Structure formats: structure tokens, C-alpha cells
Image (cartoon, rainbow, N blue to C red; front, top):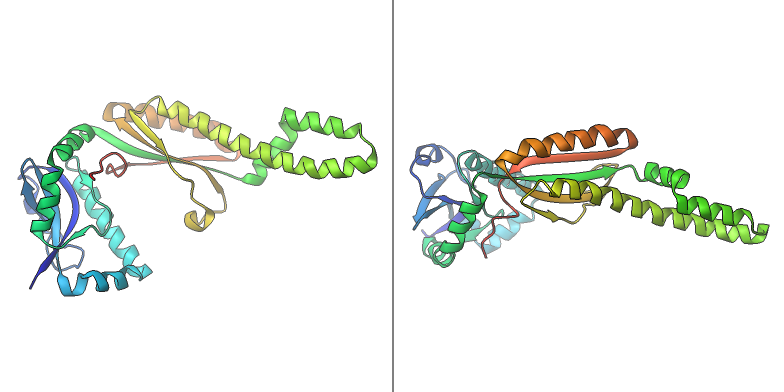
Length: 267
């Protein structure tokens, strides 16, 4: 019976981890995880039954939220275990090939790129920062302390009562605009300070509350590639920023280190 190939990631060629890998079950909880050598690299894989994980069956499975949550966690957990041992080019969840020949064709075409990526991410760590805020608190602070708002209030105070009513409605809109500017300015300043410590950085799309499950608003989302020797400085600086700004309603959160999801991608 034909076997599909589920690809977790690419690691440098080695023999030290094979025994440990053989004790890990793959995505289907049946086939063992193992490696296949490709020149100077190795692919970490497990086989899958074509009947159970073919295109139509996989589509059904990926429409099952519980299945996706469980298997995506399995995928991430395996990557984290591998990452503890050596640099890894992580694959996206549910990267599946029709067979080993199909996988070999793909990896052979990208061998040079993979070697360069593995060398680049060696002795480096990927960290993620997210900044959250209480939007009502930011708006309140802006309303009380923003010079643009203060000047507008003075102008309104000198107008006729009828004109004041209309301008006060516009003032609410101006406060909203200034609050948005304050969020962007605050978060981008934090990002610039941390970016100066990193080798590479990238600003990502903010998540809405349906995704985060939080009452606070996410106002920044970024990722950083750090040298191992810079991690302590990075985390110490984050701690200083947290101590300084959390009393004002800003929550600065960092997580990591992660496998290099953002900086180790093959085409």
C-alpha cells in the first residue's frame, strides 16, 4: 500500500538523534518518526496511510477543529523537541508529499538554500513580541494629556453654544484618532528599541480579539532573530519596559525561543 510522507522539518545531517526519534509516534499515532538523508541535510518525517490521509480524507480532517488543534499541537511539539538539539527548518503544519521520491525531488532542488539557512539560524533564536493595551484607558489618557486635544478644547470654548455642540462631536472623533496615533507611536518606539538588539526583525499583522480571546486590544505584533549572546540583553530590556509601562495599562509580552518559522523558509 502506498505511503504518504509527512514532513516536520529539515535538520543538519547527523546520527546522534535517530534512536530518540524512533521512540516518537507520528501524526497518525502509528508510524514512527524518522529521518531520511538528503546530501548534507536530513528530512524528519513520518509515513501516513494514503487511504486515511489522501486529499479528500485530509480535507475532512482539517475541517474538524478538534483534530486540527490536537495535530497542530503534535506538529509543534515535535519541532520544539528537535529544536532543543540542533537548528531546524520547520515546515508548516500538514506538509505532505505523495511519496519519498516526490519529497526528494523537492529537497534536492533546494539543497543549497537549505544548507545556507541551517548555517544562518545556527546559534540564533527567534522571539516574538506582542503589545496589548486597554483602549479605553489609552483614550482617557489622550483626552487628558494630549496637547492637540487641549488646544481644540480651548478653541471650542470660545465658540457660540450652537457651534460648540457640533465641534464637540468632532472632538470625540479627534480623540479617537489621537488615541490610535498614541498606540502606534508607543508600540513602534518599543519595537525600534528591541530591533536595535536583533539581527533581523519583522512586523506582523495584529490579531483581533476573536483570535486572542482577550479583552485587551493587540496593538503590536513583531518577531526578532537574535544571536544567542544577545538574548539576555533583549529579555532584560523587555523586563525594564514591562516594569515601566504596565502600571499605565500597556502589556508587553515576549515568547520564545521558537523554531525559525519566520527566518528559515524554503520555496
